[in-house]
Length: 367
Image 1 (cartoon, helix red, strand yellow):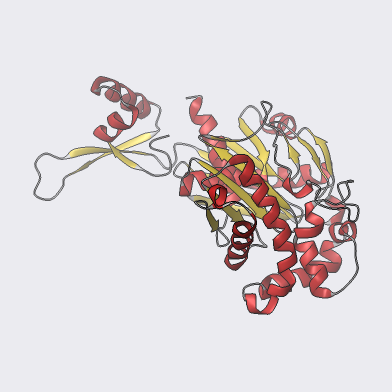
Image 2 (cartoon, rainbow, N blue to C red; image 1 turned 30 degrees about the vertical axis):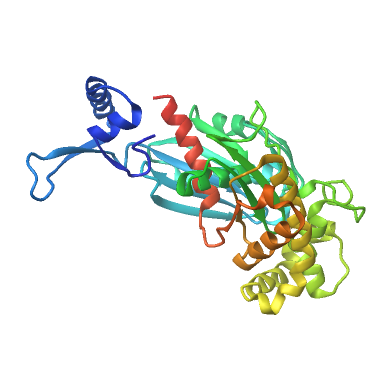
């Protein structure tokens, strides 16, 4: 992994990073050259003596695909070995396609369009309850017990395939590009999700199942959620709650999820556009952000992260500052005082990149 992502290293860098002797470095480099994974170039520094070797991955050493399964679309990105984007494709999901077979059809269309190269790993991220092989349940997608890994392997053959919750894929993106040892990732939009990254991996069960169903923790006695519970956090804190306040209309979260595209999409996009200026919409967001801050504060009390990072279509930097303010007002300074609150609202392809990184990491471990 030391060479991953387009890094250029000298023999000395590799020796010190892996804490190995010169002969082992030479053996590893020879094996990687034989496998067609790396290339070597000579570099001469100004006013220095003999040139020295720089080792880097060949861009075409392998390719990987990152897939994001969402309510509105299935999106795929093809990466080379240096994690440079080669190709992107989206398949729009209509209401009639929101079921197991509809999503399978869209996924295969994306994979067919991105295949044809030396693809060694496919990473897939999806909302809902997910383990390493299937989407167990995603009410927002209307998908239940979809054995996704087996279906893809049956179609394209043996290949490294990873499947994870969409917020967990954001945690891998955060780790690779921004670093950190212990941190929380919060995804905010139509739904609300969370992931906790500790040391080298996300906090999941042994079978790969995601743990933090933040959007569906119960925080009140309100209306019935689309998941079947009553009083879920998403009822009070998601964009549904904000849009309801903004429009001054009475509609249920079940109606919002079922008819979001047909009845609410235009209003939601308008709200997101206005949300760039807190002076215009802050009053509509404040009640929801207070609920979200309590949920985030409780997670901080449980996990003691170094930072809390926010992603998602619905998040803005000023919202994160508001959440930070509310958390620090309600929780002990000894717990939340040193924690950073960060916003990644401008990140593109974070889901697809994060899950592809995880898949490639597993592929590299097989070499």
